[in-house]
Image 1 (cartoon, rainbow, N blue to C red):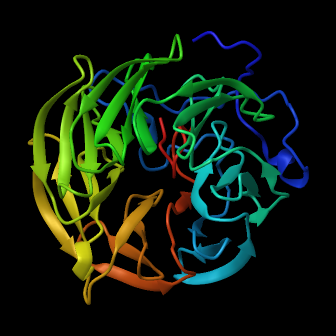
Image 2 (image 1 turned 90 degrees about the vertical axis):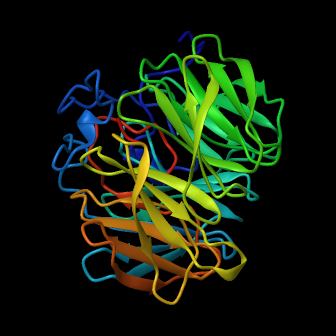
Length: 369
């Protein structure tokens, strides 16, 4: 991909104390494993930490969208151990491409708040326009700010966050995306118009739109690198999209308000968070990639509203925010039982479990490769 003025890597931990990130030379992490033709997540398995994440303390970072704050959870005690302010309407906590900085996306605050994961402390918030969500190109040369209100993808320098190119999006509510196995394109969802779009990363141009209806949310590519899964809150399940032809090839019902998509550490299963509908009877559907069927469903005793999160580094715990419930859930991935419900601030959304195995981050709450 040709980007004028872009640099390799993403913001480092030295940026945290600065008013804005400074340009720095960052050496790409050494890969612990190479993705294979049958598993693009081969470098994300248990214990596959690169030097930049080895020894980093484990925490769960929870952005409270309705409180302009982040709660920090100790995953060993299931206790909130810190709380700090951010900009207005924080939506997601996103690891940088080089794994050295976490960025809180303050959507209505038009800003990012950096966190140093080595200390779990925030740095100074700095301005970035409309950062509903944040991703990084697979080569690390650009950050992609999902400017939902502007209906655009903003390609930005991953250090200074200066604008490289704004790509207007011809559908409403762009929100989440996933990248092709060969890094040549991305597929993203538009929640408010029931559409997907495909963008060529070499030209930074949209090459097609696909109407799926409903309210598409999270997007995840299967380990084999061919089928994209798209959660749909209104349809209560996941669309199956052939990435090469950009056509819908199936639909799998999961539960009310299907929202977030996460791959298990062994790359066998897709965890689908179902937020629960008006009765708040949320659940997690476990989809078997081999059969493309729901293998089992995990219920939440007493109900809940599971939204977004991530899998622990050892693969044993699946963490999700309870969007309408002011709580965070920790599921045992072997039994599906809820280990803890942890009280947090109002409107918890895109929580990040950190550190995670992998060579680099593609953004969101920890999409690793």
